[in-house]
Length: 580
Image 1 (cartoon, rainbow, N blue to C red):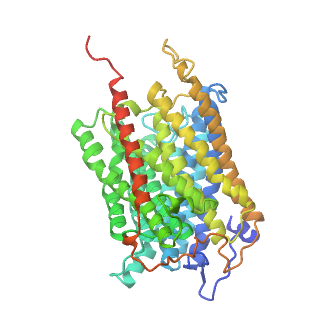
Image 2: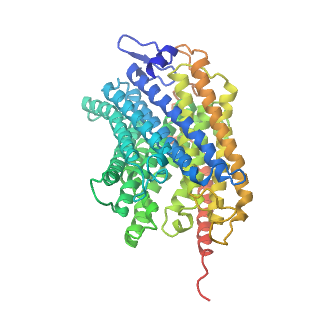
Image 3: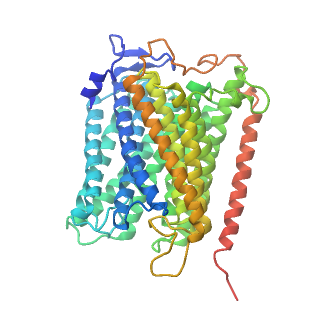
């Protein structure tokens, strides 16, 4: 791939004798080694997105029973391909790129141990190809069905699947090592020096990634030993607890990487400042200790865990992660408001926001990511993470709505913004069509936002299950009907098609820009710089800035949270009639 990319000029750049260049947008000193591997992992991630998107269409058109595209015996293969390529490969390849941005690029250092970066990428590629192959050929290799994301034992899943999943996770570990070495060398040079906030966020992301990966290696290796006959049996309860270290932990990597991207992009394209470094850092530290405990909500129906364990993990321990999210939910828009008000941009309650560069797809994708993740993914995550309310969400289509609210609109939109930013600032290419690039975040966020709402509505109010391809017309073997959900399924289907078209438009603009976009010369910001340049003016303390707009947004968010909280408890009371 790198040879072809060099032929196309995608890895070219003007560097000094030491291999550095100065970015005209961020002002950072970027070394060739870091930039090369950011491009490589980013391009690979987009390829995984394309593959996962193709299968997203097949899955959506099957769940939309008016179309019913796939037969029952082929549905799980396509669902597994969609899940692994979108939830794992698209995300993890992008997150390695984010580590390289947050580490060597932000710190102005070369990427250490590039041989490990290359080896990690090759091993990840081998693992990803192997996982895809083992899923696609599952019925041909003696496995009963494709493994889905969970690959629960004792279902008969091929040994090749478990082996290649472990290979991919080992590759991700290897690829992360150059980032940690870079951080170590930075701190060794000046132990008292504080890491920049973006680098600190990337560092915490890396730690949580290691935790998740080790859990995944343990789970899949345990199952692999059973499939190879090394051990006679596996304990399904132990496997599930091991698996959700990576199953849920991988989504927490997404969360922290996404928030790190929020801080970075709102600053460099929106002119945001950091309201309080210490407070934002404390939120990242809270994630370090509490965020993975949220995995407990996947085990609420398991008989092997006690009520005390469930209550502790879904209440007291979970509050630490929720509090951290509330800090970021205030700090990021507050930083944007303070930065723009200091520049004299926008008066009144929301003038600082309405005057923002909404035609810049990097900015709009980032802001839509913040809004939709907070309202669609964040609130619902807290609701379904409670032991009692989890009973109304567990294994329904609403659960699918929740993680599409976190991954499909939250993380993916943030990564779309980052890809557009990298195209302009690292590949040094102008958009092949500025108008289409501007449309992408609006199109995708609007369509996928409605898809998420329909999934939640269908799951909560009708109890439509998550993993059965055909349920609206009838459930085989019963007289129970979910046909009342059919109109909402039709809305879901239409907007799922539109959301996928939004993803196609993103890929067309991104790839078209790389291949046919005009070259951006050094010194030209490519339209990425915020109004008035990167540095804020005015000279006043950030704490003197008027933040009433952010307080207003937080009040709206809190009112929405309370309303949904009360509604979900009301719906819980409607599930069963107790007594005569």
